[in-house]
Image 1 (cartoon, rainbow, N blue to C red):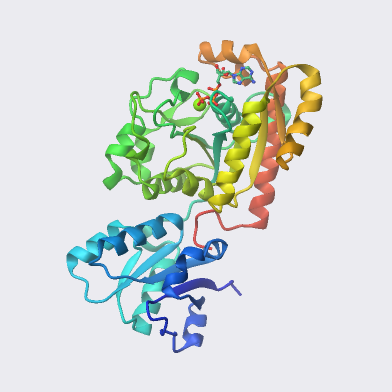
Image 2 (image 1 turned 90 degrees about the vertical axis):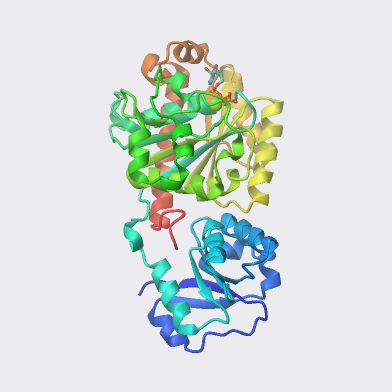
Length: 395
Ligand SMILES: Nc1ncnc2c1ncn2[C@@H]1O[C@H](COP(=O)(O)OP(=O)(O)OP(=O)(O)O)[C@@H](O)[C@H]1O
Ligand SMILES: [Mg+2]
């Protein structure tokens, strides 16, 4: 039998109880209740939820803001607003604030159950749940090598780079969300006709088909959402839009790599929380360790539970490669998953608009990247077999 989907009901007076638990059970739903004022302390519990029903006074701007914050903090979870006497303007505002549906309060059990079945039913509104896996790449310090890692891994996931072990080909997309200093187009020697800016401008009518039309194909097979050609404010995209962009990419590709800005913004934590894997790239120096500590604290504070694949980059020579990963892993209490050699060919390849695994496949760095790619694929396969529900889909 399928695991019941947990739905939390938070009403202001905390007096609503669903009268017929067996009807809910038949619909595959298990209700839990929380006092309205205790919502801020839900933390980990919120991650187990499929939906949250929240009573709200839609006429109050403060309540709307609070609702919006909550909807953004629960990516992939349906948040249903229960509101007394809402007019059409209120309803519109609630949907804009992220409501999956709006029902009247006091809650009517049958209406509530219908609304829940409706929003939790996979395939509703024709949207299939994302099947691909999302890997977000972040850095512990500027210039750590995150973009180099993201693109070379994407290249290896596409397959066809020689070597038997890289034979498996996967459809791979790269989303350059480094809105201000994205440089994936330069690294791939592409001149995208459409970029993330076109996507941002079309937020209201964006869907998977729109994404298809703005991706630029690299000769390796990588499909790139190119970076903005000019500085774009980091808040130009909303959390909800960033997540729908990830979902659209993950529906169409087996692997979606996301290159994120060094500065964290409102949508950073939700994007990381929605990822199947976070690749954290730190240079092998003191600043890299300090930055990695900050990032790990940020992930913890944000309640992000996605697994982290920790890469230490720019290891200079054998002594560094032997000794530093262990030391850094111990300092941070996070074992290093992969070390990458410092390699001047990386800059040469980048300057030529080539990926190092293609241009210089026999260098130490290319070997390190291939080994990292294999470990990541193993980690993803293990995660997928443990949790067949894709991240972000309703559990
Ligand atoms: N392993 C390496 N050895 C030597 N140079 C490297 C290595 N990896 C990356 N580089 C070079 O370091 C510079 C920064 O790399 P990259 O752009 O990948 O880092 P980043 O973390 O994405 O930086 P940013 O903060 O600008 O986004 C580039 O010139 C790149 O070619
Ligand atoms: Mg970069």
